[in-house]
Length: 399
Image 1 (cartoon, rainbow, N blue to C red):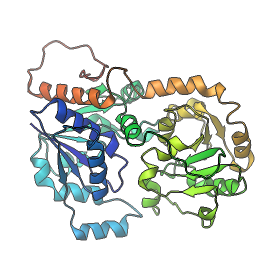
Image 2: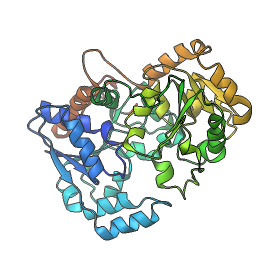
Image 3: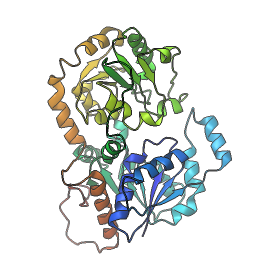
Image 4: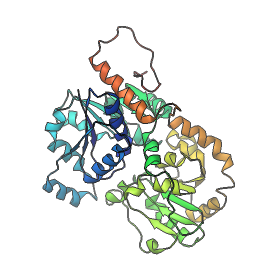
């Protein structure tokens, strides 16, 4: 059986969410042919770096072909949209036809069936975000043959929307990978002032950047006793025209402000681990930040009735500010003193979002679940309906 792990993006942020499964799978199942396929050099370098954490893995690294013409087109139009994913699929169909199973952290790979006719290819989803926003629960989630989920939150959410298919709950391998790659948080400023990481989402209908971003920068420019890291989702400025994103000039020269429009450090938890306070809107990065519970502040940029909206459940994990000019400085001043009021909620939210077990890693649990699924592909279907399983390594059917 030939298994492919696909990374098809211009940034590396999806690689830690799936590559660990590939390396662990190849170690526990030497009978499987496992290939890690990447569409960019950066993705390949990240995958190889992670691979070194799994000595003895047997994965093959496969660079995918994208023509220079397509790359030029993508460079020109990427500010408005991203066509490169489709080009990559289209120009590597022979590779995808050679696979029995494709494992991917994103949903665009379903185009191999819909657009390109590879109807016999089994496609498995690992996901690459653990947030609450509605966009994480769409009908495409039900089209995968199997899905690895980080925690019970996604079992419940997908089930509620009617999109839960065959799955296993295995956890979040990115935590394990980043802890090994960067055991200690980086010191990013030459002072001991509290550091705030501002991580706005890219979707202009949900993000705080388009309406509040400049006000946030202006406020911190006048608060030199705080450090500010501006680290938006990598898509925000890659598709700046589509998402109506611009970076005001002058703030990057402030000694207490660090702006990163999309480097590797904005996706490898460097900033999430270095900060003392989280400032955001709907980004799933809040749950990565809360791997170590700390104060959070949320910007309600669109006047959402968030208390009654499950897609904003993370707003209950910290203070909520509706107006930067009126409320943000006060929220900063009391962030540490009021954190105890949110600590138990943060702990519960993390446990609900991410499964963990003391005797195994997420990569191990995911690899076992994948191996069980592959074995079931050739096994006869049991006549009796089985009770849905939610433990790692067991195949759970849709309820």
